[in-house]
Each structure stands twice: as structure tokens, then as C-alpha cells.
Image (cartoon, rainbow, N blue to C red; front, side, top):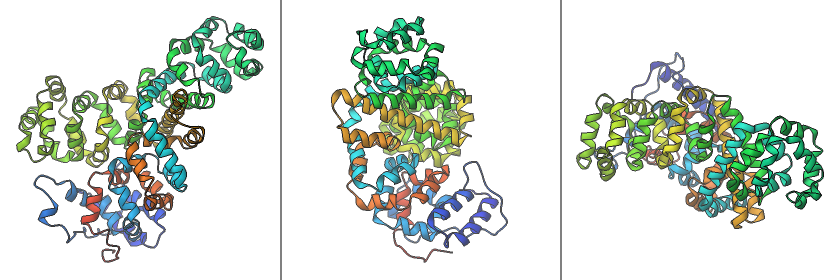
Length: 524
């Protein structure tokens, strides 16, 4: 892979000092020389590229260039030369993490949350098992997410006012239609709430309603926007499903408001907010790779075409550089895909590619925008890290990104805002999941509390619940995660390094580079 002289120069400078630093600081240094937006300046001569003597013909199959190409990236070279990283990578626990791309991708979406949770193996197991048990509730909870986000987008202050009194909000959610008449007269709501004991729809939680009526700040927000009652009524079914867990419902409402604030200020539309809230895990992973997010937003129709055949999309994302040549001629892609069994880069997923080639609607979209192959090739590391989650890029999410392409392009350059929005969406997901589970008794009280205490980790685990449930039984893996919190955070803070860690070929590349053999023989 071609690299700039300036990047190589800085690489050598860091390598000469990283070995004497604690790994967390070393990882920060690595990130600085492999920045997310381009090369850095430097003046010191480049290091020799590392070549492993362990690679044999048996290690690489014809057409499978993913591993050797990954090993030639600057990010990988930096890692294998750094003694502190080699020590971490040689541990059995790290190997268990690196061998599961979906797990690693989830970890990179919020390493701080996972590292903190892993420090308590019992709590980690509880949250992981909760994700496994609650995964069947995800569709229902995601519908509730969208309903909440719809209200938050148009009635944020009023919704937060109600959420500040969880029991009252839960009573309203349980029978939202009965409160719709207050949409035209907030004063009548204040009057009824102050006399809740004599109101059939409020009597069961009379004290909560009376406290709400006496809360001047909350009532001021409701007086300014009584339409919130109409919005809640319009999604009565979804809110009723959340009403059994007042604390979780209130937390979900607050998270929805926080996410809506971050995304709306960036210019994201209300309908797009609802789509994002229904796909929080997928958005979290895209947020971790802002270049990929911007690329998908700018070519959403072509990505939607590819995503309609997820196995083919995953294969392309895992080895995007090999498909870059099709950017000049979409017809050549269709021809190759129709004969996928004889194409080295498509043969492993021949049926999927043949089905894509036969899909006239999908091919029409690709013919209209063949440059989609170029943007993936130019950001191959980022897309490879997302390959194991290609199936999560559903049409609704992609349409939302495309209809707000400018907003997401700008948001991709604001890491802090993007991270806050992603974390709020994950918190919304966890809170609404706990609230939804209340009706089915899928989560007991202690497990629900563990989830509410670790919302981001729980939401991320929902992308691969079985894998995380299995990981909970591997103490060494949890130790590798919890004992290197600063290092994980430093790596995840740099999109290119995070992409490397989530790459499907990362574990194989480490093995071929001899990193598993803890030694200093390759240090500079």
C-alpha cells in the first residue's frame, strides 16, 4: 500500500519512543501518526517495513489478499513493532477478543464502557446474558425507540418535563389516548393533576400527578407545548408497552431528548432521527468510522443496492481495494458478479454475487453511481472493520443517511458531537429495552438494574448477543479488556486504529506476523 513520506517519518519518530511508555500513552502516540483525516508532518527517516518469515503459500489462498494487505498498512506495522502492544496481543485474552470481528467492532464503539464493565466479571455476565435473553424483544423496543424519538424531536422540553416525574409519565403512557384532550389546554391538565385523586385516569398515581402539578418548571414547559399529549396519543400502543417500568421509561425519554438535541442541531431531520433510533448499534459502529459514515451518506442509493444482498456487501467491504477498478465501469462489475465462481474475489460468496447481478433494481442503482466502489476502496480499512456487520445496514437506515447526506457529512467531522449522539442512542436503546422487558418479565430487577447502569455496553452487545454471552465465560479476555482501559480508549479514539482492530483479518495477520510469540526480536 502506498504511503506518504511524511507518515513514514513520523512513524519512525514514534517507534523510537513508544517502547518506554505505558501502553495507553504509546497507543495515543500510534494514533497521532496514523490520523483519521490524513498524514502528519515529520522529518525523520522511515523505518523498514516488517516482513514476517512465517508466511507460507499455505497461509494465503489465491485471490485472498486481505491478510497480506492488512499487514502492509502503517497502522499494523506500528502495532507489531510496539513492545507494549506485542505484550498485550500475546495474551490469551486478547486473542479471544481479536478472533471475533463483531465483538471487536462493538468494543471499539465504546471501549470505556466495556472496560469498566469487564472489571466486574459477574456484572459483565449479567449484562451479556440480559442481551441474549432480551434480543428477541429488540424489534418491539426499536419501534418504541422510534416513537419516543418522534416525540422528543418535536416536543423535547415537554417530554423531559413529564420524564422528571416518572410515575406520572408511566400513567400517561399506559393510557395515552385518555390524555389527548389536554393537547388543546394545558391549564386544564394542571387543574386535573392538582386534583388527581378525583380523576379516574390519574387516581392510581395521585401523588405523582400532584407533584407534577406543583412543579412550576415542568408545568411551564407543558404550558408552552401541550401538543406533547397529542404526540403521545398518536403512538399509544408503543408507549403502553413501555409503561410497566417507570424509571426505565423516564430514562429512555431523557436519552431520546439528548440524542435529538445533538442530531437536530446538526441538521438531521425528524424522520431520520426515528430511523437512527431503530438502528442504534449499526449507527454506533458507523459513528466509530466517520469516513465510512460520510461515504455511505453520499452514496446511499448504491449502498442500499449492495445492502439488499448483505453477503455480497460484506465480501466487498472486507476487501474493498480489490473492487476499486469497477468504479469506472459498473457493467464490468455485473459481468464479473454473474460469473462469480470464476472470480477470485467473489468465489467464496458466488451465489450472493450472482443474485446481485440478476437484481435489475440493484444493478440500476450501481450503474447510476459506480463511484461507490472507489469510495470504499479509498477507505478500505474503515469498511473492512464494518464488514462483519454489513447485515445491519438496512434500507431504512441507509435512506435516512442519504436524505440527510450534508448533515451527516458535517457530523462526521465533529467527533465529539457524533460520539455524544451515538451514546445517547445506545442509552435510549437499553432503557427502552428494559421498559419493554417489564411487560414480559424477560429481565428480573437485578439484571434490569445492571443494564440501566451499563446502557452503552448492553446496546452494543445486542449486535452479537451469543458472542458476548460466550465471552463472559472467558476470564482472560475480560482481564485483557479491563486491565488496559486507557490503551483501548486511545486506540478507539483513532478511527484508523479502531478499524484495524475490527478488521476480519486482524487476528490472522497478528498470527502471521508472529506477534503471538512474545519477544522483542522485531522491536526497533
